[in-house]
Image (cartoon, rainbow, N blue to C red; front, side, top):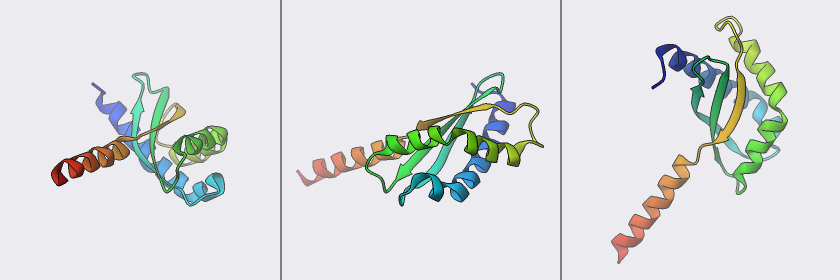
Length: 117
């Protein structure tokens, strides 16, 4: 169970990283990828932020995560610029693929197939 402070800092990072990806994403991804931040999980000591991204309009979604990892420094600097007055220590960030929506679509299609039979 996350503490109240973990949830607050996670939400702060989620909102600001969304703005950063919206501004810098087209320069990083080179494609028509739509990337959204779905969740941020903070470590108990607030030193690590696990950022979960949902990716659309791309076949190879792991390549987008790898591009984010390659541009890690620039993305973190943009995030730091936005949140530095709100937190004492800037957490390290890691990017993960959130495939929850893809899994939901797959299950819905299976249910549709069952309904047709």
